[in-house]
Image (cartoon, rainbow, N blue to C red; front, side, top):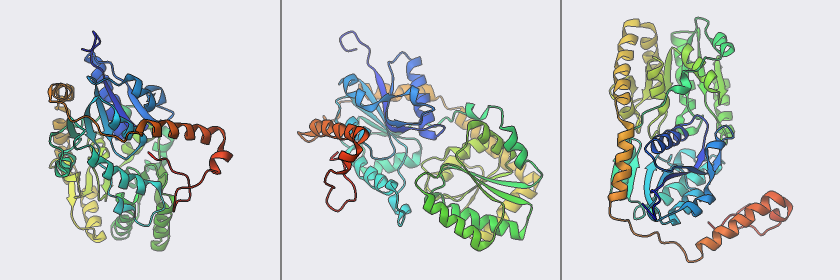
Length: 410
């Protein structure tokens, strides 16, 4: 209590997306915290318009900040919201969702390369700042420990499947529910997800085993149209038909796509957890996935893992799973058992225990920031306002050395 006012437990993150794993986690955490009687808001730098009403501007957090409050910081990329959170006096409980190593984006002209590089560098500055650091998987927790975080733990992921309990989009369902074999991938269409490998695997499967099959690629590709273009060139070079790049979808469309899928295929080489794998469990779809990063732990002894990206090998696995009903049923039973273990976790008790542990732990060292930090924040906000209201004046400002655009000092 502070002056008769109960401790607040707020969350801060760079962006709240619609339907993504981090956004769903933040909303679920807020639900638990409010149910336990804590004042709790979600502060973000940006938000999808569909969930914007669930957020507050991260700059308002400075007014809400109190030394006895707990700030749950969802760390996924470097951001202004992250840097402001670092400078506040609140106790900090960091939740690490992992950051894709920037080497996966070499040769890609995208701001995400810089965000991932700076995010991983920025994360190390939080080692002395955090009262407790949690990974959303054991893989993420181990990475935190290797960076030197002294107090770590795992905040269990208990996926919320309510978004898949909606009525499926009838038009999309009819379009693909025609007796063909549907191979599904759900996730952002980015280089480390290895969409190019999925195309190679599908080409081998279609040529060798089943011409009446299609590959459904579902997920956003903002900022990676160049990569998607190279995937298109590969499709043209291999002359493989029936590859459908569907892009970002609504919950109704996603439900329809899971409903018509015969197998979920992943070739991703970096995952901090990978929620679509568990969504596939929920929808009863057998999973075939590359054994990289957190994927084996997420599958928890279920599904089918492969360790070599020989297209003939993966095509044979797909054929075995799709054509052998007894094998498919055995795989799904294993996934059902894994899903039961996920759903058996008491997320509410785990979260509240971590909050209590943060409140009872000895305080971490006060944050150390530059003496003019808050002046830089004010200057940056003024420049943002100038960019919005007077873009021609903003564009005439001198650029940072070696840069094509003006950059914020913080």
